Image 1 (cartoon, rainbow over the protein chains, first blue to last red):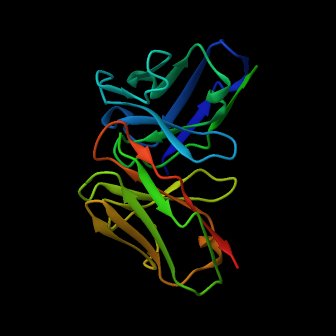
Image 2 (image 1 turned 135 degrees about the vertical axis):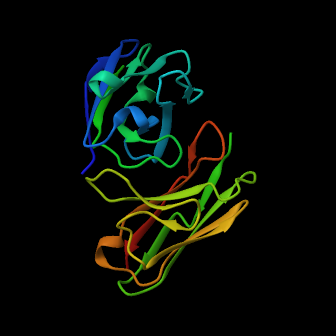
Length: 116
Length: 107
């Protein structure tokens, strides 16, 4: 069964930085687009960023463009999300998801809390 | 950016009843629409992709229809495990977007 395990979440102050990681297993990671999706407390799902198989084509939510960077290391079966200049509005569970179109499956998520 | 509007926000039904969920796109997206199920404490799960194709392990009681701007997810006879929040999502263009969700709750 495909496994996606996120890590790196935690409590950070407004303006701070955090790097999320996602480790993939039981599938050929380098063959797939990968995506980050988030869910703020009490809110719906929000697509954040997607990255192609080679790490060359990237797409971002407007509100994170310039602050977040999606990247991958295919040799380590890992996806990353470098987050800088964090705001309270970035507080959410961040999910790592396989695919870039209708992505699936999803990891369990990692919680990012930005304090003011 | 394509805006997806889901209705109703909440659907109160009993097990065994039929559920009909709607998703409307702000512009035509062909059939590039997916539906996700999100149960409390679990990650979301793909239910339907490309408007009408059931994902693997999606039961046959789930069906999707529509194209262009209007889409429907139908659950023919609700089982206890179907009570959840359902989101539509488009893959026609970047940025990918989700609808606001429809909560299917037990009446």
